[in-house]
Image 1: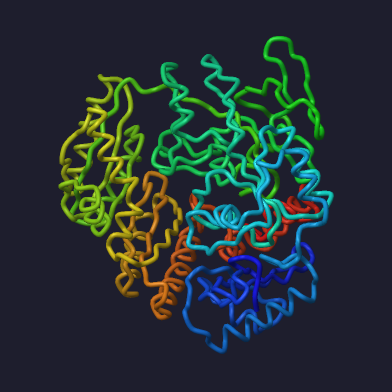
Image 2: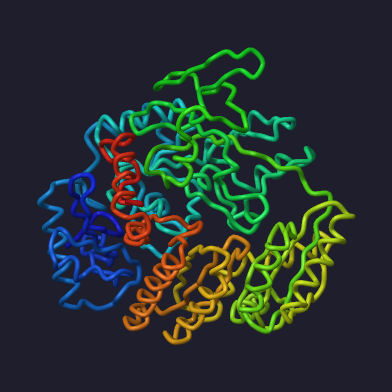
Length: 576
């Protein structure tokens, strides 16, 4: 079968609350140049569920199998029959956009800001995850929120799926257009406004990245510390509930977002902490739909007991409830002094045990990152650092010059108590940046362990008290499975990652990766944790979300989705 786009996720959609059946396929060259479909080897065992009928559920995978086995082909035929039966837009469907929609979008944004070029659509059909490209039917670049509202209202009127796109640095397939539709690239909305040094707040649009904001703040004595590693869009970070290395001291995105300006699926405008109010005169400026003013002063209050917390609802919603077009962020004072260190330990258990005691002793660490033996060696070689190939903690302290001396002494004592040693303390910015650059290059360092192989990064988060046991069980599982999976983590939050490096064309190894990721997610749930600490659910962890939140929790989420997006047009196929 020949399809228009690169990747197909055939879905059987039922009424709200019913489970969905899905199957991942990838593109191969077809006679018309647009690609034939061949089944991928799924990360989750979907085939048995597909054969069981409508009530079964299979999850999207992303490991490609070069052959055609009878079981995938049978599942493929079954999934395609289901899609045809329900008559909805399937992923990469041959159904074109409704007549007149493209012209209407061009009339709003201008011809240069609307594209149907294949290269552009392919670029916007994937993020940094292992999930194969699923391109949209068209890509648009709104320049401001009013223009975005008009185009969203047009898509809503024509019942066309909509996918928000920031910088494409996500890790769970959040931007893949699994039902085609229109991708809204928000990178050209890049205003920084409402900076208030006294209120420690600033408003940013989706085109503003973390590094761009901190460059803008230079000279103010303030900074935005949430650092997921990638130079991601700040609104995108809010949409995925991102965190990173500084979260142990400064928190994740959730407590650092004070207000959001959201364009809902029908084009109406919502301020999650209330509509704009002039800080000086208290003038109300409401925005209900396209054309309504959206440049009002934003609510900057730090606490409120008024109604439901709509801001927290949209943080972590992964583009499934609306477009985050502006985020009012909490800023923090720059520390007077910063010092970093690399600490070695006899084992991962000792390193994790030290982390727990550092937190229990209330040492105010700003970062505390774990690297297991394999990852420490990989980072040392990749970044050309002379580090031993042993379990390590990278830590960083923020404070005054006087307080740092006391904190360093406390940290050294706890490290030594667990059989470790501090290699050296780095205070010069260049030395600190070199150390943290090695940590942020962990993904590339892991891939360098097996050149030519594919990588998959998965994360879980568990209570601190259970962290040592869960990390050690995971290490044993990796060894027993014969997998290459260096571990790294923000252990101050109980959050750690496995970067699995495998041959995608080896069905046996791909199956072992699939089995391991399921066991890891369920191990975290059994320990009272979560299947994802910061990557999000996206395409890959929907089955684990059901196990984590339960039937009642998932039903509540579906009711929220139905209320805000009754036509299920916002980033369909993700999370739920």
